[in-house]
Every structure is written in structure tokens, then in C-alpha cells.
Length: 324
Image 1 (spheres, rainbow, N blue to C red):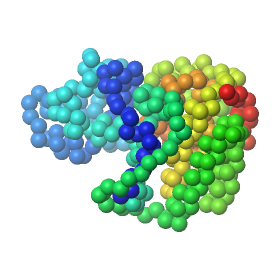
Image 2: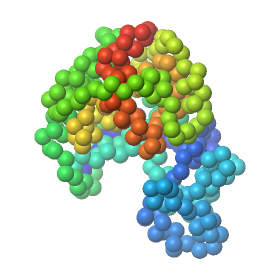
Image 3: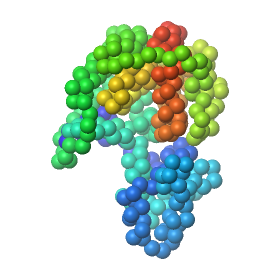
């Protein structure tokens, strides 16, 4: 299998108890089948402790019931994981072992990245000194089983390279690049499937009021948003757009919806322009939205159906943004 990662992927290191926003609080963690099978082989205090906090969510998924302040029941007073300490990190749930990494498989190619939902990863991507770039290598893993449309996949693969070039053309202001990206998305969407922008009337800023609240700090960000966007750091915002293109662009092979993925790249920039011009802001949004099924499904619907997230309206927002 061919593995593709950002060049900075290998630089990520978890800072564990020193993290300013632990990934072990705020959301429930699924207990995957492989981990559950291993836990049944255990005995003693750790087995009793695991069994005592297993529960099911409204969808029937086995989860670890959260403790006070939405903390994982294994997160101790030093913000370290008691399960990791007792049985080793390799036996913690799959989500815990992989976070903040995301994995997209496309047959013989696997793409891996790190998410803004982790403060450390967010700082890395916000402060990149070199352009957001990628490297590839081969490993011995077999291709992933899939039923994707190969013709569409390769079309999107070629188109994503063009999208990268649009976003990283530093001879043009980042806002103009993003307008061009939206135009590119409209044109590409016409080639791969119908997309009728909706007329839903959720006000722009209310789009970011999520039904599931993970960190109250995000609620404060939304409540105290700027009416006029801040002057932005072009390189950091370029990296935000590149992150969204890398993570989501090719997933249009599953739903023929490329325009929504491109809108996400533009909105990612606007989030920081309106809610806070720093890595912490995009981190909060990512943790709040990308890691909540409820919030993410709602967001996807807003991208398609809300007229305030139309290409025309997003361009209006971009024209208000000043860059340095």
C-alpha cells in the first residue's frame, strides 16, 4: 500500500498531562470490539474498573461513561491515563491509540494526517515555516477493500493537485485564491454531479452554534465573534485551507459532493477571521465539530442547504477580510 502523509506528520508528539485541552475530556470514547475482547481476558482491579464504566449510547455503541466535568473515567488528577499505565497504550481503545490522526483509505493508497482538534497538531500546522507539502512511501499492507468509482477517484486526485496549486499561489492574496478555489469547485461540481445550493436561512454565525457542546470555550468564541473579520496571517490561513483539501477533497468519491468540501476549506479560514486569529480557535472548532457525529452531520447539511453558506455569500465574507 502507498502511504501519503504531510511532511510534518512525523513531528507530532503527544504532550500527555501537559496538554491545555486534553483529548480525554469533553466527548465519549467508543470501546471498539478488539479492545473489548482484550478487556475480557483481564482480571483484578483494572477489569472491575473497566466493566464499571462501560455503557451504551443512543445509537447502541459501547462507550466509556464519562465522569464529572466530562472527563474520561480513566483520566487521573495528573491528566494521565490510568488504563494506559495499567495495561499499556497498545490496549487502550482504537480512538485513543490513533488520535489526533485521521486515516483515509482509497484502495491501494492510504492517506494519514493530524487534526486541528489537538492543540499540539494545531500549533504545528498554524506555524509551519515551509509550505504544506506531502511525502509518500510504500509498505507491505494489502490494498483496502473498496467499491469506489476508480474513474472519479483519479479525476478528483488530479483536481486536488490543481486545488493545491490555487491555494498555494503566493503571488495572489489568500482571499483571492479562495475565491478562485470556490469558482474551481463550482466548475468541477458540474462535471461530477448535480448540486443545488439551498435557501435555508440559518444566520452565518449561528451555523457555528452546535447542538452538542464539547468545550464551553467554543461557545464563548461564537458568542463574542467579530462583526468585521480580523486582518489575517496569509500563511497560516493557507495551511488551514490545505488541511481541509487534504482531509476531505477525495472523500467526494463517495457522495459526488466536491463543492461542500471546498466550502469547508474557505469556511475554515473565515472561522479564524471572525472568531479568533490563532491556532487555538481552529483547534476548538475542530474538536467541537469534526469529532462529533451530531455536529458534523448538521454541518454537512448546512453546507448544502443554507443559503448563507452559498458560494456567493462566502465570497462576500472573503472580500471583507484584510490580509498581511
